[in-house]
Image (cartoon, rainbow, N blue to C red):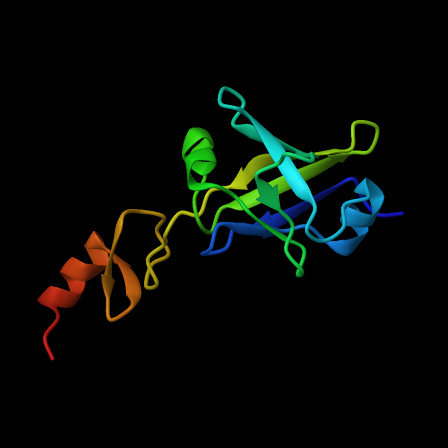
Length: 134
């Protein structure tokens, strides 16, 4: 029996993957229309099957989450999204698991970073680099 919850990282295209077992339990095939309800206080989203839904499961089992919905719940690319399955209501409840906080590649501090040659570096390490003698 498949667990009633799973976690997925929100990719750069704002998509999450709903695995085959979960779709089978919910009877959600490909190209199924979904609608969503946002709880801004709890920062959760509930997905459910609907004939007039605005979201769709693609052929890979992914759902693209609308930008306005993500802004309402303060989610972003790279965040871990937890999904809880409610078989009786035939719904999938999404909540934030872990925020994607950039970390310095040198010291791994979870701070505001700058990007140097494609690498995230914190201000402390950037200052150390600028003072270094070659």
